[in-house]
Image 1 (cartoon, rainbow, N blue to C red):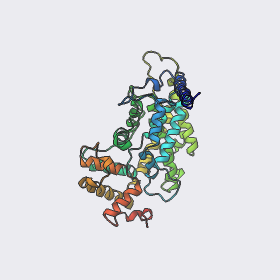
Image 2 (image 1 turned 135 degrees about the vertical axis):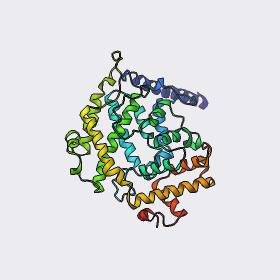
Image 3 (image 1 turned 135 degrees about the horizontal axis):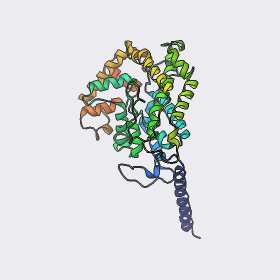
Image 4 (image 1 turned 90 degrees about the vertical axis):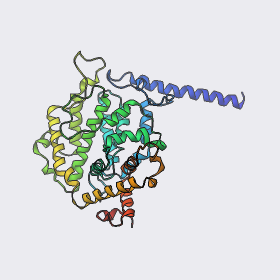
Length: 374
């Protein structure tokens, strides 16, 4: 046999094997819940592509998100506390990983599509600004078109990443990313949009489970609150310590959502959705409101909060007026200099935004001097 024939035979064997891998993975999905999303039955992508060789469609989306620049920048973006000095405070990246882990646990327990949940989880917060929710609040005030991080996350995967052509993700992943955000109050009180996949619903509640727990731990670490300050009725239901709280919340979600795990259609009139036990839901919402009053709102006050407001305004005004200073990758999908500025600024890490502001107006970032290069 010639070398060419041998290489061709080897290539044919490899092609046969890798295609068999995807088919096997898709066949495993057929054993999921009757209501689980299945990659082989995805609503598809904006642009048609050849099926992946050794992954399902949702696995390919997960990997595309994981390798983006926007995902990497999450490690230097504030979660709640502005420029904390300790090494153990949550960042947007650690939060994202915790959300993904909680969501995968719930999805696996309910026999839902774990790959889809993970893909949504990894991409859901890439649109967050520097300086946490205060940065988002400022961009929303400054930009006439308004700003919401979930919509920016969608914009990143659809238009900004991959040199301005986007990631061409499946409809299910994009739907989950843009619908993860929750208004203040009882976000579990309303019946979910029937078009929202169960995996997206899992991610939505997992986001709350993750941030409520690490925000409590960070607030205690920052000495903003003590463990004893937590409402007694909340502690009685959720338990003490992050591990116990997460375990109790996740167990309640799985129990309340158990009909979603069925392998056959529910009775007429029944609709599968992700929920939580009544007492647990009440405790979660009370803890959430407690954190708004004692942690989230105070975190935006003081010298650092005022400095962030000045920095965001300075950056927005400068780049809106001088779009030529914005990298070209932000130009192709922006319909105005203001949109270019928003895309650029929202993608900045905290430290990059501080350095840019300091270069434009030396001394403006004095409240963050320990974070500035010497």
